[in-house]
Image (cartoon, rainbow, N blue to C red; front, side, top):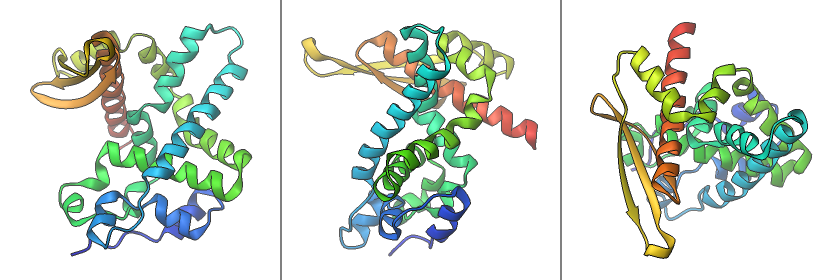
Length: 238
């Protein structure tokens, strides 16, 4: 059985002011769960791969040009705060991307339209579709429009500089206590990968990966801070 019908893809393209080939647009919004349940159709993971690269380049060039006084380390931290899965899912929520996704029944029933990983991946796929349809300049302009609301948030870059401290301060201020980290590793000793899960009051908030325990914890902390900060901003607006 297929999932519920999503909102028309054309409405999303009009809202975002993008020119996209109709087939690529539908492909960008097609999650693998929908593809597998409907005769193994094509899905958005290849476009996601492409969009991730375009996103990173556009943000990197923008930060380099607009911050001539920042060193490499600070530029890298700012980039991380803008291209993390948590930041992308926040953007996806702002543009209402979830209602346009084609999801399988299982994902539909478990809240897939609100899952940060699915939203972030679909947004990257959409960037890839714009690149293939309209070229690099249009794709770069699209990326910069997407991240503009994040650039206007002065707290975000502070969190990128010291995510664990920023998360602890925010979670304490919100009455959620101290973050708890659980780190696991995989792979051979010469090439280990670390995966961190950060929880608040017993609830998993975000995850992060890296080549060291510290790097994984920092990635998880930044994602968790973005989730909490985004929720706090939404409540203020409401």
